[in-house]
Length: 387
Image 1 (spheres, rainbow, N blue to C red):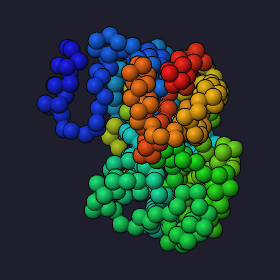
Image 2 (cartoon, rainbow, N blue to C red; image 1 turned 120 degrees about the horizontal axis):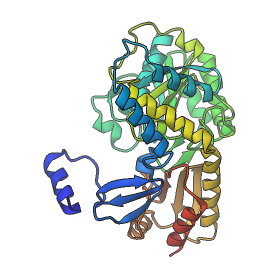
Image 3 (tube, one colour; image 1 turned 180 degrees about the vertical axis):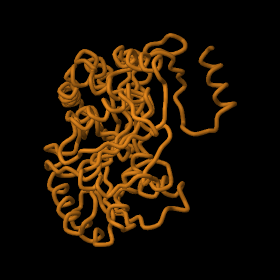
């Protein structure tokens, strides 16, 4: 099919959702993708932070194919060797006291279950989340999202959601109380323009949650699985070494196979009984093979370290560009802030066959590249940016 035929087909038979690029991507390898017209693009957006080990990494493809040939699926009513291996590997890289994994299908589902765990553990209903954070499009998650139009799109909202100001210690003191079940935070607010908070803020947040007996939840759907240069933002120096009670994950976890997860502390896990949580497809065998292979590739290839290198290369590339006001973020979750708007830069980079992303901040261009992008590939980006 030609690009035009593909575009017309999707427009005729699919509901209108996203505003799409006029590209039909049919193949990918590493940080490169090819269109239906066989044009090559450098992908520094990674399918929205999904392709952590690049497109169609051969080890991940092999693991998926082998598992699909052996057993594609059986529900959680039985035990599974590959689920056991994926669970053990994921927990092994998590900071203490995160000790149990619950697998689901997406980031919004992970956040829904994280909030349910907090409510079940505390017997309370109130959830505090933050202005400009994004947590998904299902009912509870979109009700926790105080970013632009999203919460309005989710009306009628789930009750007992309260907004706090991101990075503001006084704000959390005023809204987190003994009625609070959980506090849900995107530790780097990606869609809002890669907004960051200080380590002291996270320390205060942990202390406040401990004081009132509320569960602290890090939404690491984008920051997790090595993207910020560490396996997780949780426990990192940027987090003030704070570890939450729950971490929600998705995006890069399965290299493009739909999968989400909650990592839960041992203490909180003890409050969860049989049938409190459930999912038909969560923990399916093909998804678990993708999870295990993805984590193995990141470890074997040293990609958390390479994510830190990528950040340095991008910052160095932007340092001499007079139009760049600042670079925000960590590792492979970066926001380049421009003085006079990001969209013209985004469009011109696309014309140079480089895919990047925008955000709700009109001045911020987002980079969410695979963790295995090379220095020479960042140099191509830098040359195009300077042009």
